[in-house]
Amino acid sequence: MTSPLQNDRYTSSATGPRSDDAVVARVRNLQKSFGDVDVLRDVNLDLYASENLVILGRSGTGKSVLIKCMVGLIKPDAGSINILGYDVLKLSQDELNELRLQVGFSFQGSALYDSMTVRQNLEFPLKRNLGIYDPAELNERVVRALEDVGLESAIDKMPSELSGGMKKRVGIARTLILNPKIMLYDEPTAGLDPITSIEINELIVKVRDKYKTASIIITHDISSARHTADRVIALVGGYNKLEGTFDEIKQTTDPELEPFFNY
Image 1 (tube, helix red, strand yellow):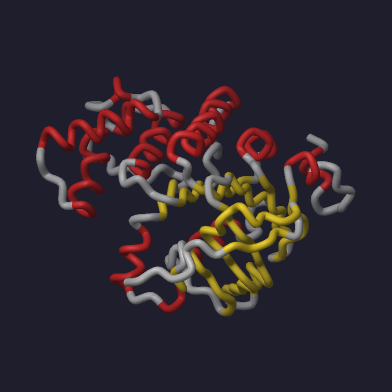
Image 2 (image 1 turned 90 degrees about the vertical axis):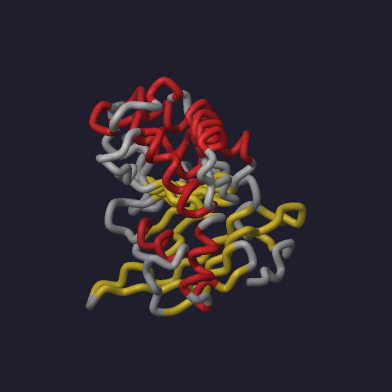
């Protein structure tokens, strides 16, 4: 599978010219309905290298559907999706699987295997996707990934022994262990207490800074958006309602968005 146009450049109308930044993901005119319900009506976005882009919106506005379309888990009704130069909607299943190795997906529920220890959960993608079975190499990679999320002491624990925040961290470590170029976070602070939420937000920023990943953070949590976003897209009614920095977006007087900032 060849990858065209990976160094293409574009312009973001919300933040001004971005001629020095490579676009690593581009979505245009994306539409998705479920029965009579139009979830995504006309969504457009550019994700730049080493950028944290927050997709902000109320529950049920199609935020999670958007990122699932981006990695081929859901097929949109119309539009185009380009990830790392690949036309996602034209890829075979094998090509999609190859692309997904470069796009880490941090699920809302962490998606850990309950019957496996933390170590085994992190070894699993290394064995399945990279064919690594050498015990020393597996241990080195697992320990390093857990150190990056501050959980090396939990390496032999079962998921049932972990708090919600710890599970989130292990889920992120399991994603990072494959060194993805793009990270997708689906409601990373959902169900967490305020202090743990801050820790997860700080980890998302640390991941960007250390790994130079581009990330999309799906959230309805204003605190998470404030702490993690380089740029925000407000998704309302299946459209990009507003786009800009957090400080720009919070000045809105739009009646559908203003309540977010008046908590």
